[in-house]
Image (cartoon, rainbow over the protein chains, first blue to last red):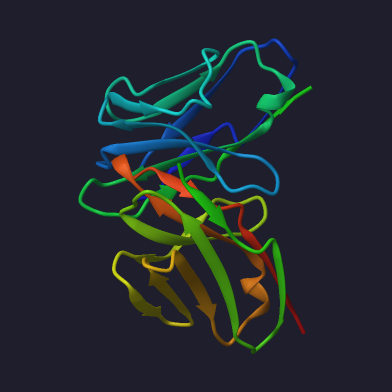
Length: 113
Length: 109
């Protein structure tokens, strides 16, 4: 197993554009989490899935953000009408429900100009 | 809500021992994690405490006191590669993690 992967690793976009990120978790991990991290801060929870069900969304996740995990495997996070304040590292983590450890992917760094 | 406090920066000497503290206020949590994060990389798991006491894992140890709202990470025999950010995090419902702002550790010769 190669661990959690995320694509793209870097994304530069203009304000107002839509962007979509993908996360491929460790196979057979049924829980998948999205976090956002800005410079000098710890990661902040955005949302999580158990299999294909989205069980919780943070208040940080405005209406411009949507996440899916259609078949309980990979997940996508879409940001519509990006704003400069969306610039951050977006981290994905997966977990097997029998374990306590979350394994993080390398992240997607988003820059909104 | 949960509030987690860590020192922003620490500096230590190669070969020495350093203790990174984490204090928190919360209405409840399942356990406390410590993660290491090198610049531009993903956080990697170091330790997990559920019960009060010390958990030792090689050069790294972590301590938890629920009654005092306090944890620390102890790093022994410091190496240059230990220069990184160390994140304290609480886990609650759904196992989502609530992180502190992290402590940037610089190891010097």
